[in-house]
Image (cartoon, rainbow, N blue to C red; front, side, top):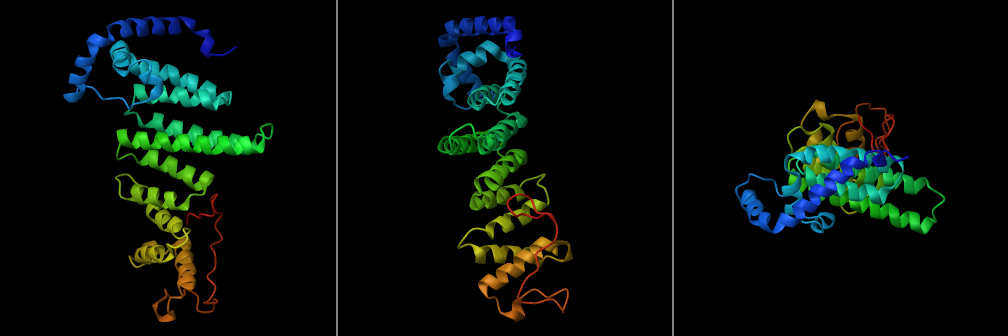
Length: 279
């Protein structure tokens, strides 16, 4: 039996509260707008599923209960995940993120479930026709990106939201340009992981036509000093030197003079999916 169905009393209470809120919604609209204008209330993002009810009615009805209802809905989201009910999960997280738009982990979870778990399910579920699997794969990936965009609107300095959507670009969509852009945003934020500035260059180097830009950037990191002389960075710089035919006197020096200069050696570290290696 569904866990969600084991607590019908809670559902009834919420429905009654919602109905009561809807009857007084016209009288609450001006108050809610005033509270938003004075920054006493956080405006929730516009989402169709909530617009049908009325956002002001939702806020007025639930008030301080929003965190509690969001926690309850998170349990429902986990149930959707367990049952691989991805369309229902998408709707559930629309409600959750509207209830608590400034809670970073809600956005991260939505992106992870849709962009990683749902897409992986579409890659593996052979019971679904291939054309439909592909359609759903890209649909779920796009839904994850939409959650990321809305989450960043609410939390502009979020590193975690960007890290999660970068994984979708990197692992699922193989969208190197968007991955490079996202890591480029991450590296300039407080609390950014050290690898973000290198990943920006690594993925930039994968984008056709941007090899020179990637070379200048990665060479700039290399020139900062020995702390940046990491195996993957050296490999990428040398690979780009070959592609761009950089004159030998301008190339980075060989650590081993006996190594074949014309063929950069790939690090032996185990790569992440997508061919990325963290030194």
